[in-house]
Length: 576
Picture 1 (cartoon, rainbow, N blue to C red):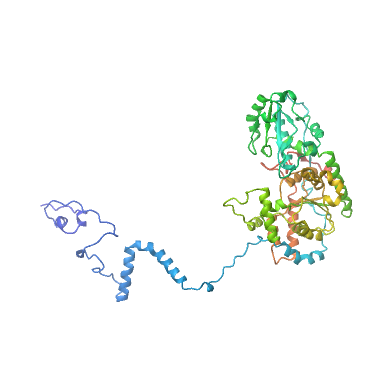
Picture 2: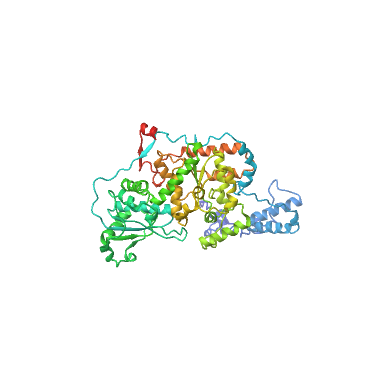
């Protein structure tokens, strides 16, 4: 009888037909044995030596009773891995039982230290360094501030005007300029650029009255309207009102005119593809609001019109211009010892700015109540929305807090300006001025404001008009040797660019690193010499950044090079 082939599946089973086959029996072959269940569920019989009682310990296994019990316990855990799921619960229960036996008085307290620079400590720094500051006679003053003003040659205004005449008008564009003085300026310049690009006639922009600025001034109250129209006459048609025959179509009601709601920073292509067809159809369109409704990334023809409007066509009205020039003249007269040079500081420490920043200073409970009231008055509900978390320390560390008058004084003294330097302060009503301004006057006793330079009756025609007061500050800051910006915003945004346009491409502006200032002013161990060294480096950095070329999507109003300016030859640089 031939030998039967070896069957692997049959050899897995134990006894029965499988054993007969293995022994060469002649019965019918059994079907394959089903695979065993999971080791967790499997039980071997006593015949196979299953269970712990019948298992023989491997060589080297523990022989004592304690060792055998431990070995069996570990084997049980390994075979019953689900027990491990209860391990965290057992651990937590044990910890709770333990903590219940420990007195809380014996638990060490966790001390939370504020992050460096997150707490306002400038008054303590000033008190500690005041004597060393006054004893320092190494100031270089205004004589050597700008060392990079002529670096790599200078720049000069270079705006080409149109000499080929204007094509037929596509229609009239009416815009509403919203915001404060310089936000309105953005609207005006962008409106000129859009109107010129679309071959449209621009109506003198209407200034939207805002509850924050509360200034009812019209265009002609702020700017020289005739000069504006004349300067642009070869490039953009500008009129002071819509012709009667056009308004008749709309029942002499501007609200009946089609109004475009344009997204912020829209491209000039949008105006060409969407606005222009409607303009041709209607002959009169309205765009409201219009601030920041045109992208800074635009073709040269659009940029040229922006330059022309901002740097050449917009001139303040004669009352503002004459009054501001009087202030500039008086500042130069009082700084005769410094060659007629003075510093202008744009200080943003008004109550609404302090409230909006959500920063904490040194006014205690009174300051806290004032800020809550101011926020509710100006931005009802904005700061108390559910889920909104305000972190004053985080805001300060990130350089978002407005500089106090004391910090401005510390910074300028550290930057090398002595106490006989003449300073013009451009600001609104300073919060808690009697207290907060005292240190600044101690450090710079020659400090001037609009109110100190002129008599009350001279200032009266402008006093209750925020935009006119801002225009006066703008002019005095424009003609200073050094301009210091402390908080950002539209005012320095335009002023820095305008100064570049006038001063060979250099802004002559100190723009401090407020993140670094927060660290320096909160350092309890810093000495005057070390602080001054750091601040002189900051001043030098501002000097190096004075001349900058505009990058894509940068504002042309802050960076007029190269769209509005071109290289000046050496003769022109030396002459300037």
